[in-house]
Image (cartoon, rainbow, N blue to C red):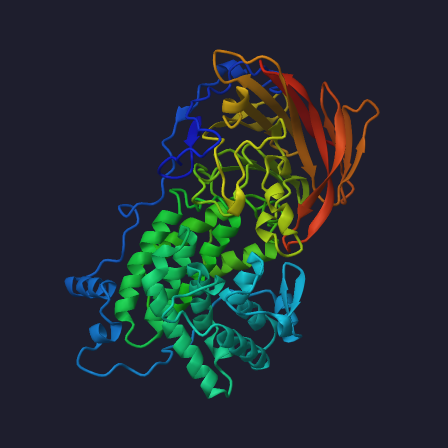
Length: 627
């Protein structure tokens, strides 16, 4: 692959934020980086400079168009958008049809059985935290953590409940929770909607969940509750019609549009709403996703949510024996390969952009439900995560700028961090889990989990390479990343060599961080070099502190060598790896890692630290399997 220069992760650059301006600079790769790590490979000076790639853009309508309509349908869609009631447009010469569901939806996507069993026992179970249903405040002013807000007001608990037992055993619990929620949330009313329940994303999720799980939710003997629920669904759909574009980000808007389209499919006189919703959904999907299929937040959790929304919406079409627009099917096929890029050897996900180590079973179930049979993304551009599979070992490398602030949800300053797994064992990890704060992960450490130091990469002066702001957003810092990937010949076998650099520390410290990773094709040796080079012709004086952190996965026993230049890593499967540095000292410090269920686990980290002159420096290291 030729060198690629990635400038941001959306179609335009983010405006500079207070405290520093985002820089735009091309950083030549593979010059003066030495041959200490090549070990018989190509000389660094022989490699070409990186080529410039235009800033990643979301899919424009020219690439991803709305469904083709005739003149009459276009007129209906326009009239509905202008506020003409759907019943008037669908059947102008008769009374509106009675409110009912037109079909029964069966989604292929299941939930988490353990959480469903907890519901039937009287508790919400969210990321390992139990909350009694009897004590839950469903009202708009309730102070719930974000994970509980999504479960309670987004009704994602319905999927879990359905997975826990046959439908007739779950109906009573579903009716109890629905009645409590409706009593606490009578609707937006004349004064407008208030509280988390009326966030566009949660309203869209809730509406879609009601339709998909209607047999369980409305299948009891309480006719009054059924009528109230249908009225609430119709009112929510009308509210989304007016407010869907007010979502704070594109993923929230996509959820809102999915709810609108589902209502257009499953409620009477819904064709005008469906035409309106399909056009909005296609447009929002085009703004959510970059050219290579990765969401612009670069979050694997957001990628999974987008896939799940489309799976449920496709099930709504199937319930009516209708085909969804080609653009929706094409988007599903586009979304799955980037997600698989972040799968380790055991199928679980890497910890990136706030996500935890999502279990393999959950990932596989989502991919199976999507119906997409594919392989991990190969042409990694805006998604930015380089993946190298060597035997059963997998290297993941963040070689792209972080998401722009308007796209980020739990944005992390993770540029040039990596994860490395050996079979089913994670050897080098990132802490992860910021998106799970509010469960077992304390909310107070959420920003710390998004910091550069929470990732396996180099940190200067204990500062983030990109500013980590409140509300999951990011500020100034990394503006460009240049990356070059190629296969090289070694004295014994072949290897994949990835070299990347970022400018996140250039404006503050006058230094560019460059990282070279070389993984042998047998997966048993990973060589690395971290270089700091001056960012301009004028070199600043003095020194600055640095730390290169390697967070070691759970279940790995660490021990330092006597000379403090090496460490032994004993894995649970009995294999033994050694980490070595040619100079300096190695230290072991405490760390934590958030698993796929949102549980923080104590781990350790290897740290190389010291002071480096503003003129730059080079720090090489080796991770190798022994025996």
